[in-house]
Length: 503
Image: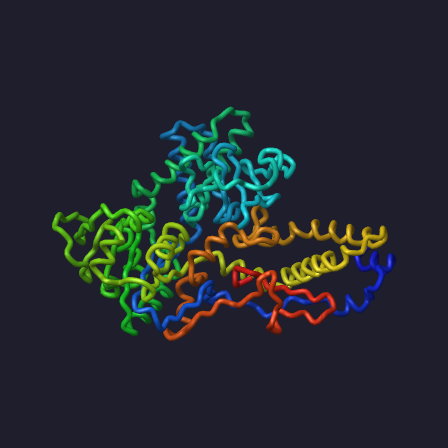
């Protein structure tokens, strides 16, 4: 029986169910534009004089073919270099298996999603390619909370006793999938293995794909297959240049790779747009290690030995450090806005230590917003929030009949939760939320990024005098003051979320 049928039958004291049904709160059906720039912190482009960019997944966006390439090469390295079973070649990359921001327990070989309060989202814990039952997860962790001392370190890494690794890089999607596939193979064949060794071997194989230039050479050889959205990045750079803005590029990628990509995106004269270009910067070390000096690179890739006294336009520099960069350019504080896709390696230190303004590029945002705009999502969330409000309001009635109704609502609410996950990703759900709470990824995004957007092209929708305002969403102890947050029904429910702003 539907919950309202139960309600009418039992006759909860002082409640008119038909009136509640007529006044059922509705989440706004206004669609969110996926090309919007969202603000965590108030920021005006009027104050920005210098624009900085990462390269990969900031100026250059890649097709899904790149993840397949990385997966296949790393898988083959495991077999040829680390002597893993030949049977692993049967595994192919699974494009929609993992999402960014997941945590991996290195010692337990478990991939999972954790919320902003360090709680594991039950139903999103995977060993290999199979979900782990909630009861088993609770037994392993003595609940669902992950203590701070075993969480990943500041940069999301598993170091110094931290047994969790957080995958924050878009390039890490093939790594998560490969870890899961190898775990799956060993379990299916009842092979005893050490999870720590597996994690380190996969990590090394993925690193070889990048460090040894295998991926770079493959992309350069067929750039049209792997690089997309080039015209939009070019339009943004051209717009900033026409308005007299200073621009710089700081990337971990090598010059030949960047030069090939930027030539494809912008043209052979791409370096004329940038006042400073730094390659192989070794972020996040670039932002903290004062010991590495800049080194000039010739067009043919040769390294020069002369001391760097200034950073000249048109030249290419390698490594260096931010402190020397600040000394040589004088580009300090909130007049600088830097864009990157990696919340830790690109943005965290700039926000916390140097006062630059930061913009996070989150390509997944466009897909998630389109899902949130669907009638199915709006319907599910409206009813889920309505149930939550009903339970909150009616739990004060302690008579058996009322409690029976509330218990039924609680069961229906729990049964609906997986729908809010599966609509985004069947295994792990949304990048930004667990069933209700913000994810650990969202928490870091809101802390380290002043603004965030799906791609750099979103800047084309705003003039360079625009001010971005974060929504003043009510804190839990505050009453809503604005119409969009006020429900006129007798339930007095609000559907404003603390963050992220696009939800």
